[in-house]
Length: 435
Image 1 (cartoon, rainbow, N blue to C red):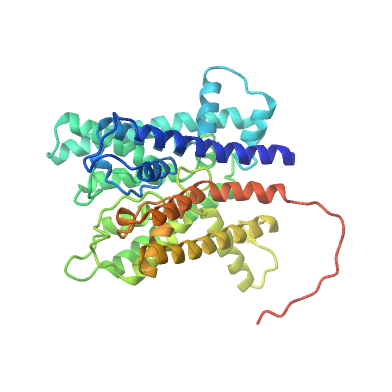
Image 2: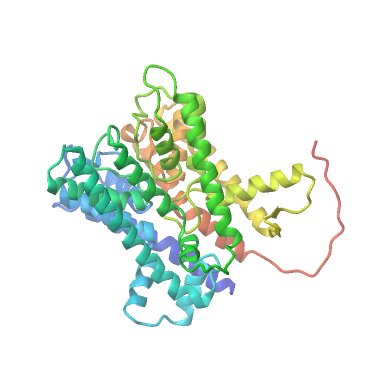
C-alpha cells in the first residue's frame, strides 16, 4: 500500500464524518424540528449532531424534547456515524452488484486495518447484514420488553424499541427517556447490554466468527478482543458491586453488570449518576473504561480494547523478563506495541489538556471535568451534569473531544502506518538509565 493511498484514506475518513456533522447541524435547524425548550441554538445543533454522528450520547438539550422529526434525524445520524459513511456507501454499492475500482477497494482495505484485499466485498456484506439482523432482533425483543412493562401502548412500545435498538447497537447512548434506562425492567437492561456488546466487538471479529470452520484457528486479534472484553466486563461488574453495594441504596448485580458494559462506549444509565454520590473508586474505573472504549471496527470510540491490552501485555512481559511481547505462542510486532503506547499516551494527554481547559471555562471540579472529557473522548455519553449546563467554550471543548475520540485512534493508526520507514542500517545499541 502506498503513502498516497493512506493519506487519501485519512482524508476520506475525516471529511466523511465532518460532512455528516455539518449536514446534521443544518437538518436540526430546519423549521420542522422543534424542541420543548424553544428554538435550538446553532451551537446546540452542532453539539447534538456531533454527539449523534460520533455515537456519543452527550446532550445539551434533552432528546425527549425533540419532536418526532428531530428524533428521527438524530437516529439517522447515529446509524450513519456508527457504520461509517464510506462503509455504508460501499456496502450499498456492493449489494447493488456494482464493482468498485481498484483505488476505492485499496482505500477500504486500508481502513479495515489491512484486511485482506480479496475479502473486502465480503466484509462489507457482513457489516450490513450483521447490523440489520442484530438491530431487528433487538427491536423485536425490546418491543416485547416495553409491552411487558405494562406502561406503554403498542405504538409507543414499537417506537421506543426501534429507537433504543439502534442507539444500543450503535453504542450511542441516546434515549427518548430523560432518565435513560433507570427503573427499566431487568429484561430490557439485558437486551440493551447485549446489543451494546455485539455492536462494540468490531466487524473484523464478527466476520471471522461468521466465517469460522472447525479447522480454522481464530486470529490473535479476535482472541485478544474477546478475552479483553470479557475481562473488562467481569472486572467492572465485581468492582462496581463491591464499591457501590453498600449504603441505603445498594447497587444490584444486574446494574453493576449493566454499568460495566455501558461505560465503555454506550452511555446508557441504569443508576442516577448525576444525583448519586458515587464512590471515588467507581468514578476512576468509569473514566478508565470510557477512555478504553470499544474494539477496532466496532460502533464505539475510545482508544480501543486492543490498545489497552497490548500496553498491559507489554508491561506484563517486561516484568517477566521477556524482551519480546509474547501472546498465545506468538510474538507481537514491536511496531504494534509502540503504536499502542503512542495512542494511549496521546489520549491521556488530550484528556489532561481538555479537562484542565474545562475547569477554567466552566468552573467545574477536576474530577467532574475529567469524567466529562473521558466520556466525550470515549464517545460514551455518561455525564455528571456538566454537558447540560456547559458554557459555549465548554461545549466546543466537548465537541472537539467527541470528534477526536471517534476518528482519532484510527486516523492516528493510518498516520503512523504512513510514517513507517524501512531501513537496512543497523545502529549501535546503548542503554539509558531508567531508575
